[in-house]
Length: 111
Image (cartoon, rainbow, N blue to C red; front, side):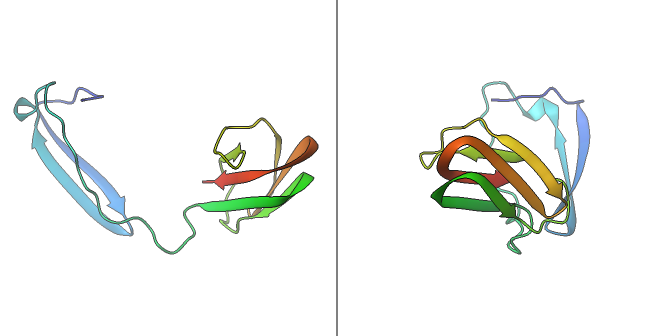
């Protein structure tokens, strides 16, 4: 499935794992019936791109020290990966506080 219509000849530039890359294609070669799978370079294995916190002790407040050195996007789920509403505070560039009304266990995905 194609999700964007691009000009007939386009050059796409990007950076993957610290290395610049460039892809050239001709849109005439691509039809809406095509399924295109592109395997990119491996992701960052240094562990600083994202962080997963698993809370196994029920608590009304979770302190997540992700050490990503930036304000982050946060998703809170139960242990079955169902999204859960929570009060999220980005305390610093390296810490997030997640609060609930009742004690809870689950996961925090930090990106």
